[in-house]
Length: 280
Length: 280
Image (cartoon, rainbow over all chains, first blue to last red; front, side):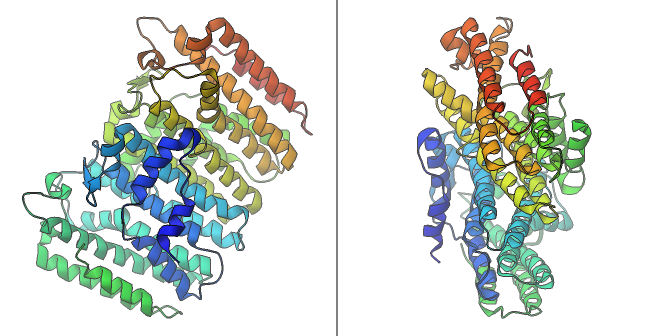
């Protein structure tokens, strides 16, 4: 499945009253992102035979949710980033107002895309459960709750427990949900979905620690926004060496959990190992 | 059904990492609002016998979506309003950052509340359809699309057609969805749902014209945000007298449509008539 093509098909058209909004939403989504979350979802779905409810709308919805979180995170009232992946951030290009609305649009459209499945789902019970997981893991007790804690305590010194709790919500919740939803749509049993949830949390924490390392390794004359905003990160608390070890340790813990699944997780394990050593 | 109590039960708890976020969300929702949309949904549901899928989670979700739109609309990058219903707006009280995130939180939580029904719905097909209507009517081709057009063209002179198209999306989409969802959950047939959609559009346009009149009638020394932001409104285009007549005409058109329903719409007609002559 070509993820870029698929994603394009689920984005709203730039026409009529929604023209400017849809254009800003497309600009935000098509940035050469790694599409980690839909790829993890697809691997989990394929692990259970690649049958059942079509994961494409949920893969698209997941990437829209992830992108919305970046678009709002970049706003002047939050991190105030002007460049992402070598291009102007959405608010910088279209203005602050459209930056807010384009993020809102991606959040709306994620749920609209997932909800559209319910009408003609082959497995409506699975699609409904997947939608509920998507909402729970992205919302107030998941990603957004982490984001809100992060900004409410920006500049505060966090303890290691607080920091890991934050990573579990802000970053790991959507990664965990991606694995869960892929498995749910393919018909995996409840026990496997719970193992994938736990493994996904560890993959997500490792991913965030690796992000901290990449941010911290940027040239000192162009400090990343973590440094500008004096954020506590795994690297600022424990240093680069310990961060490297922790990223590998969390990834190995995830892989150990995957060995308890009823399905063959070799391709997923490979991806998790590659994610743990990525340099960008 | 006591709407305030019901709504309170569906709001997230102010605890743990989400404490500040949930507090700002609650502040935004409990403002003595008229709860027009959940009341319309309940009336539509009762019109079809008040049986079937419980409308309470959808009533709460609808009010959360409406409130999110106000919270983001009030932000400095949009209308820049500092007072709503005699209290500080959310961003003014909690800061711009939390204003953005509280709006996001209400949008997330609306869909989480509606999605939670799917897991244990008595009528999952109805709940799924209601969720899809909620997403469509609030999203890029509905309320948000209208909001984005409005801000992208703020200060521009709009034609009457553009203005009515804008009102249909920005205001009428959620009002129309409220009537549709109440009927869907109670098991109304497709024909009645379509009539309610059309009637709801007219109720919503009448509602917005009445809002313009109330905004315009405010004392000149404290102009409403429409005047400050030089927005085209029905009143600025056609004057107060024509606006009064239009609000009544759209309401009567809605009521004429309701007479074609298979159910007794008398209580709903009464509410629409009261809405058309409201002074606040």
